[in-house]
Length: 431
Image (cartoon, rainbow, N blue to C red):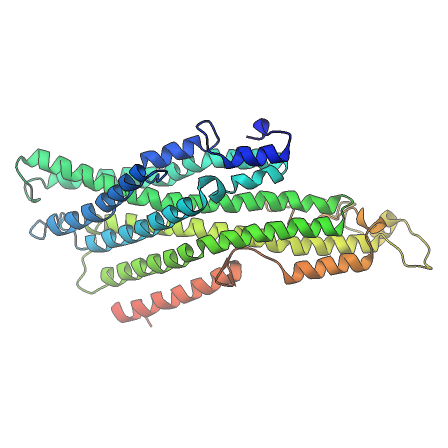
């Protein structure tokens, strides 16, 4: 994408706001069209809503009420089918409505912040293009294994219980049509849910790339005003992302929590008889929902952690610049000799010999000293003011004012664990 950029910024802005057949979103548009969630015109919009009503609502309802098979043997009854159908339909309805609203209100290009890439560096553009092309593969990576397991279960269920399952007309033809419709419904609902989660991950990764690129300003002779303007621009996009996705994240957390607590409640009752035939589909549904929720929470906490790491990086930059400068009336010193006397076991770049920092370190979060380019042009008070600003405006993904960081995840985990123990206390007597 970066190789096709026009040299003039204004022409680039115009080129990126106009949709055309050969743009970088061609594969995305084709994917949305095949998924029947493309609403670029009135006919595609009607088809999109029709497919959602059929595969998201009608097929699960018909499957549950007409194929409950209450008279079947123990291996073909589906006592937990209502939880599976209600859980998948609710999260797919939420995902479909949110995706429809996002694309209709902002457009796919603006929603993915492609119209803002003209202001980014070549490195950010290229890396974001790579991640954009990988997004659909990530959706397939999560959906296909679950779909294979669901297909194996449905084929076995219809093939082994053909004489017991209610049918219309010819048995094999009726069962084949019902099996295909159920699999299409499952694939449609699951893919729509994972698509919205992966798009959120993609948008968050763009901000991670921008923060990594932003971290380079502390390694060059930068102006405080330009640093502040760039950080304000990143904060604004993080606020936009939080505003767009906050309702989806909250409702997704509520629906998944309700689904898991309901599953736990009905499977731990004293009269419940669990086996792979009865509870296998319920377990697969739980894995699907929890995987999507983990994608959301991990992406949000990752970008929040990176945004908060800017404060640590700026503080380290301020300290290094202050140490390498000298007050009025003092004799200039040699920084390298002083550093060796104060930190005898630390190398010139701040690393201990023989220690491997691993893959956790990057431009934002590392243990390396920063060459103090700034002290020659930026005063102490300006650096201190910038660090204070970062401390008060750490940014990140927020949900109605609550930052989605690791402490928030610990709080959510504590609340969920309390509910789990309470339910287990009511069902199997754990206190």
